[in-house]
Amino acid sequence: MSHTKAFDRAGRGRGAVAARRISVPPVITRHAATAFWADLVARRCASREECAVMFGVTFQTSCNWHDGFSCPTGDKVMMAMRMWPEEFTGGGDV
Image 1 (cartoon, rainbow, N blue to C red):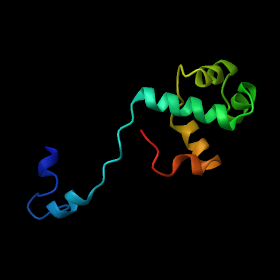
Image 2: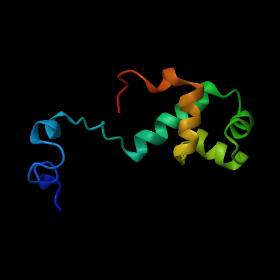
Image 3: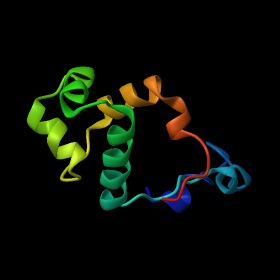
Image 4: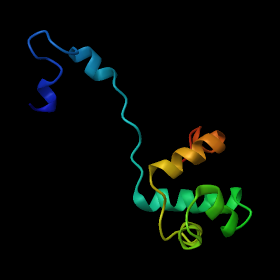
């Protein structure tokens, strides 16, 4: 079933008005996510070693994050969101 019909199926499901109320989160590019993460760990972790221990990753992974070569998967991002919620709120540029 196409997405356009998902909201108006013969009185079942959500109506067209509800479809207009949904919000779509801003799109973030992989480059922007990697740059955000590199900046975050550089500011919040005293060293690459501390970052590795804090997030339970290898030292090489921590180095890759700091150098902007890669960014973490969802579980590490969620850990950071719990540790530093203020970093993930507000109207930052994406």
